[in-house]
Image (tube, rainbow, N blue to C red; front, side, top):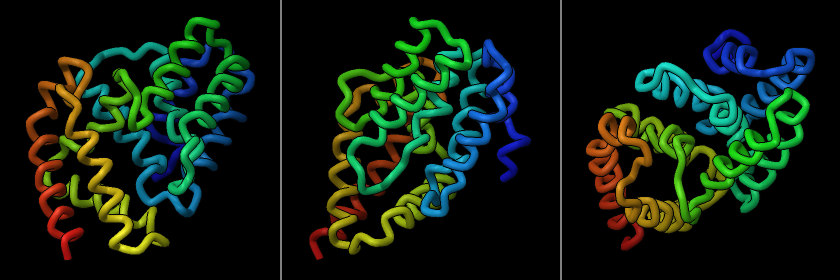
Length: 206
């Protein structure tokens, strides 16, 4: 996809209070989201999440948008501090883009809330997890792309790790934070997760 001509880029330009550094930071994010190891956590993921959001809402607060824009800015599948590093980059760059101190704090909190074991959830989590509520072809494509990001990991190890992640996610009650995402995606997300968990459970037994 053309990251210079998509909903993500349009909103990035629109919502920045200061415009002088917009193109510089937008270009930096575009480079990050087109890194070759990203088969799922890429610009398409960012744009798709925004599209699902705007299917349900008319407007978006700047702090929520920039939290979403930066939440996967740093992405190494094998690292355990992606969220912290992404939040640090976000804080530095949105300060220069003109977000207020309170907006920066809210945005950082939203990024850190996307950690698997976070104690709370925000609309950014809903956007991030909305792929779970996609129809079956969309979900299967997502599963395939996630596996590709961990291509260096043997199937047995990956399957056990993926199963563990899904079992943690399945404990979210409800799965989605906002009533809008809940109504749109909760049921299908449960079905998709249950199906993948069954398949992985069988795989790890072999």
